[in-house]
Length: 181
Ligand SMILES: Cc1cn([C@H]2C[C@H](O)[C@@H](COP(=O)(O)OP(=O)(O)O[C@H]3O[C@H](C)C(=O)[C@H](O)[C@H]3O)O2)c(=O)[nH]c1=O
Image 1: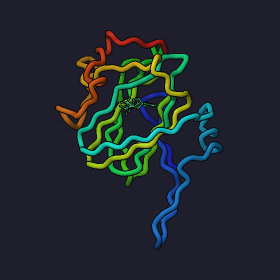
Image 2: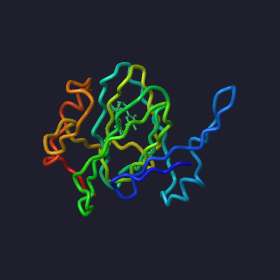
Image 3: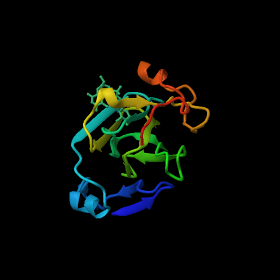
Image 4: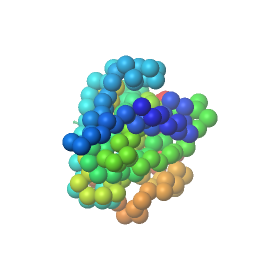
């Protein structure tokens, strides 16, 4: 497995070993022993999958408050995304900083996002399917968000007029957002 560090402690990109032959390929997409060796607290308790018809669909920036904060292991089954995480951990030296990653069905990159981060992605091709594991159950009462186009974060999304849910249009700015990490 290939491991790529990010600007954040405990967040990283990993690429499983891919075994290709004349039929196609095989790879272990999740192995608790491998994940455990990266001192990632287990267990993941829920798998999520989303499908976005068009390029320019932006989902985020989302997170759940403690005690229901979620670590996530994200990968693209089909298509491609520009994936963004924002450090919301107040004591972190990278608090308020963000980093973007291109995850596609072709590079097979997986992004591990620790608890305490806001997460969002923008699709860059049609028919994009994203699969991710989370280590805390969905809790609408603890769900919060930050506006995708927050001027202080100034994230360089690949589109200027994304397709957004009503909910994502109404999230507060970074400085007015509620978080407890
Ligand atoms: C997240 C979630 C949602 N839902 C229900 C609630 C809504 O009725 C419906 C669609 O949810 P939402 O519009 O929040 O879906 P996304 O905009 O794709 O949200 C996700 O987008 C970004 C990228 C994330 O990182 C989060 O994991 C997640 O918030 O699914 C559930 O039943 N369980 C869940 O775990």
